[in-house]
Image 1: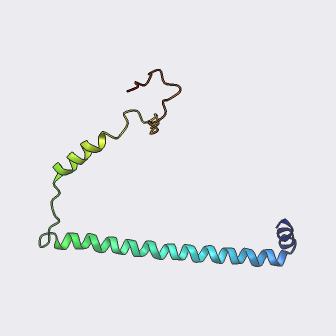
Image 2 (image 1 turned 90 degrees about the horizontal axis):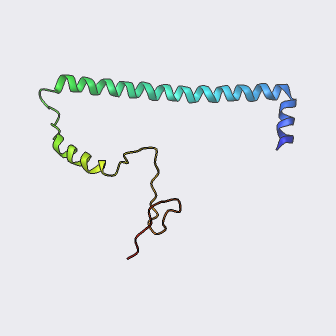
Length: 105
């Protein structure tokens, strides 16, 4: 593989051609991303225009925040109070560094 790279780099014309090919590839990728960004911006503008002009005729549904509060309270039980700690989910083996001895049934 190194021999192939050395042979390619030893020919200046081949290096120029490959550089131009890389630039053309980069340009085509950026052109595609620019088209995608313009399309997303146009869809966003159309959506905001739809919301502005048809809000009175077709209002957005109201969100019941009580349901989300209940879900949030349920999920907060699974969030650790200290984010720097790790979760040890291996309940079958006691922790070797633990000071608490496990109770046997």
